[in-house]
Image 1 (cartoon, rainbow over the protein chains, first blue to last red):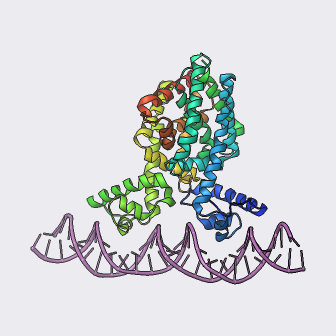
Image 2: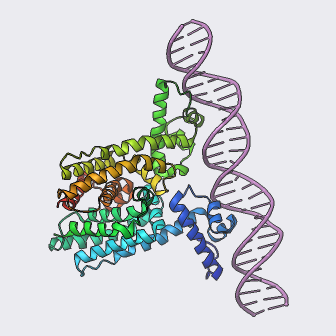
Image 3: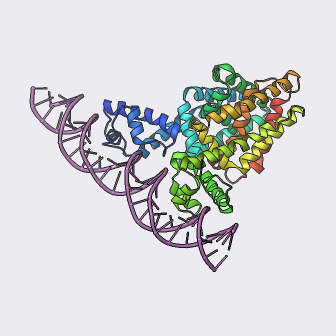
Length: 204
Length: 204
DNA sequence: CACAGATTTTACCATTTGGTAAAGTTACGA
DNA sequence: TCGTAACTTTACCAAATGGTAAAATCTGTG
């Protein structure tokens, strides 16, 4: 796809990483069309043609970021253990999602941008990778509910609500900063609120 | 700001509306920078200079949309009655928010785009208009909780969770369409799930 | 060290884009 | 119905943008 395709050199590995890091923040904030190659180049201290040396095009950078994101983003969902304690498994998943919003808000916003815009580059990925995993987790949750270990509800909407609430802290950070000024949005009350909320919801 | 400033003619009112309607869908999907004047012109069957005849610039269209949005968006929050039944007041607010996600997904995504990108054009608006209203509603909810009429929790995070869950159905529609294909996301289970969720959460 | 390949820089280029100038057309009140 | 102001269209333009060509420089290995 990009360049020689042989074993990447040390410099290649470093510079591709620098490019991705700079592009992540910019794409997350300004979107794909709203970000220019010059901006990315400036943010990582390179010249524009140098970016094209490492990535065939602006779109190639974006796609690389989305691909990386997709696997990282899904891993906590994958980690839910059907044999574990239902309530704890789901709460642990929620904690991981909150941690991701805290540690990786750029990734969250990159994803949000892509989905809000109709997922033009990610739809196939969502269908091939996310959908099967999602269905599988829904079945697990359904079984837990049938066994009376969780309150009864539509598992898909439960997952949506978890995503919505946890990602909101990263995606709408600008709004939250205005409404809860000064406070640390996470250390303060968010984690505790979210945990309490879903514990109460899920307890039969 | 824009044009003669006298009483707008019939044609002005109609054409400005056509422009706003076209621009709303495009800005919501592609973001401000990702939308071109030619696209807007094409979408409303006008020529590019004609847009500039009605709006001084692309940014003026965007700002007009955000201003309109801001007041419409906040009105349901404003409608919460301190003297009403607490649980019913909040649930009614949630129902209105769900209805807005169903009827006005473009507006929801326009707002989401703006906030995800750090609210560059809306920050003052958020501080002057949203913040006071938000604080006021938080105090009302706080009082309800102190009176034992609602379960105790952080009112700000409660409101965030309401926004997150309800707007998610509009903002992440592309993802939901993949995960719940065929079904009508709203008529089906969403409204009922959300209502049940918050009823359980809020009941003392 | 030498040198071949990898990397970086400078100078460009074609297209797109927001916006303007000005001529042409239409609507509407006197 | 006539004239003027409102509106629309055509032809442009300068800047920004994604990307290329090729010269210059650096790096690692024999």
